[in-house]
Image 1 (cartoon, helix red, strand yellow):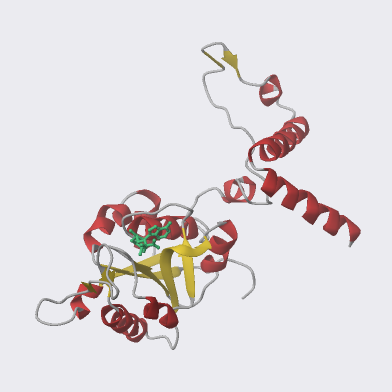
Image 2 (tube, helix red, strand yellow):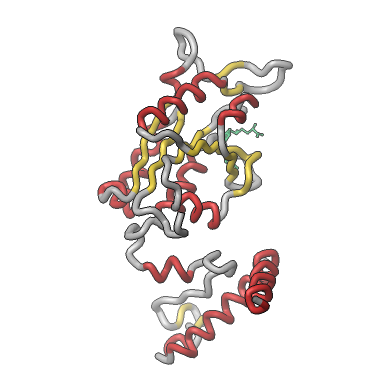
Length: 246
Ligand SMILES: C[S@@+](CC[C@H](N)C(=O)[O-])C[C@H]1O[C@@H](n2cnc3c(N)ncnc32)[C@H](O)[C@@H]1O
């Protein structure tokens, strides 16, 4: 891997609700990215590998308790189907779960450089039979909250990765400067009108002096990160101390 995003990224989404993706994948920049071949998203309904004549994908938990748990067979067999149809020896198997590592921009960058298809497994009900975890490479969470299913999490992953693929977002600079690009939140942005309900756009931004504007933006990003995300700010300060030593 050379640190650059791939020219295209391939996702395979395992879900029992493939229809929820249809408008998401056909609109705006994502729709265009798919049309242009920069992004590929294949949907796999793991109910097709459901067990028995009712094609069951879930069952009651051993030991009792609320709700239904996803059985391993439909998901594991669908993963094998994903690998076969991809034509590759390997696919990256990612379980979407509140118990996983929290997704972030670094992970999005890593996925955008992935040469193999990325299979995103969307849970439902009370989640996965524990044994499914031995068939996956990674477990990713969207944050410390519980969704009804993994579909919205999969959409978050797909969007954040797709915008890193060269040519998907028109303006390359906006990718470089935005939040998390260098461990900082993005600086404050303003557009018209110049004055809104008594609030004026900072004068420096209308000065036309690009050096001063750049300096103001950098300081604003530092101030914002320090007050809103002290954890991120500490990381930024630490990495800058280290890079100035070397
Ligand atoms: C209702 S949740 C099950 C939660 C499970 N009982 C637990 O406490 O870990 C159903 C599915 O939604 C998805 N999900 C819920 N919250 C998520 C999160 N924060 N990040 C990623 N996926 C999530 C997972 O795929 C999960 O299997």
